[in-house]
Image (cartoon, rainbow, N blue to C red; front, side, top):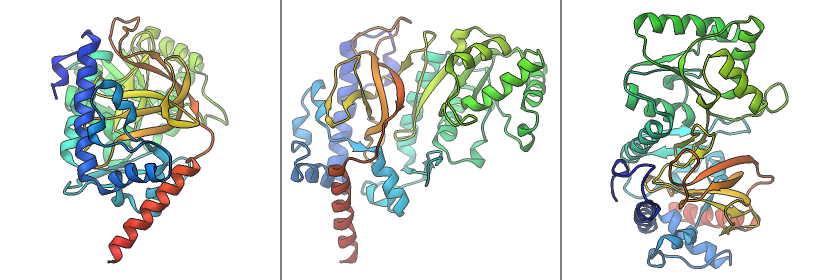
Length: 384
């Protein structure tokens, strides 16, 4: 597969489609041949009448990528709940570490990785961050979140690896026990300290509720912290005092209290399932990393993609992960706002999506039966 850095968000759509096709087809072939769980999943789906029998030979052109069998994200959650996450690991891949979801709705889902996959993932995350967010060497990043040694969350671990690949050790952490008491004062002192050391751009990164709390405190005190960079947001927007954080209000108050333009407040969709991030451009469109394939699927039958502009389940395929099959249909409802063949208002090519809400319900019954069948078969093999 061509190196992603040889392309860019100004490249012709046919080159981007070729890049996606080659990378994902090759990864599908590798996992089909080397991951027993996934191969049996593909076969069992057909046995249960849920889809066609798909093999690597069936993936001949870009449009065929839609045929690749998708794993519901709830599969990973269910395996983690049962302590069976090793079942989904590819043969002869050495697992070096794991990352988790936040676990706010029960047991945290665990994802296991080898270092080679993480290296490839991080390469594209760094490229995307530079291209969309314009973060540069010499900039400073302040995390409004725990340091990586205190959290196995994919959103923390992935961001740290990405930013460290750009700004090296110019990363600071606001997260201390005292943050709950006076976070705005601690942040103000930290920004002033960094400015005394160097006058480079200072960016913030963290979840919406921390931004909201700090910005509200600054508003009450009629104070402004001049960061000169971007405020990058990640994580869920709900669970703030019993409701959802008001997005427009948050963007406006962040811009005002950190003395930046609203276009420099950037939300991002974190994809723990494939360990990547989809950041917003200056027009607040969430851009998909160029190597990924994204599609919106029919909630009633996620083998079927819906038309661009229609709501459905967001599905992703990654060319990078070898430790487990990274062909996932999420539990999130979204819409494609720019297709792979179109340019965004910002002048960049390729898919953009809008996250709408969590889907209702859990694993479809047919897929739940397939999962139970696969677990039963693999447990029987272990006993032999």
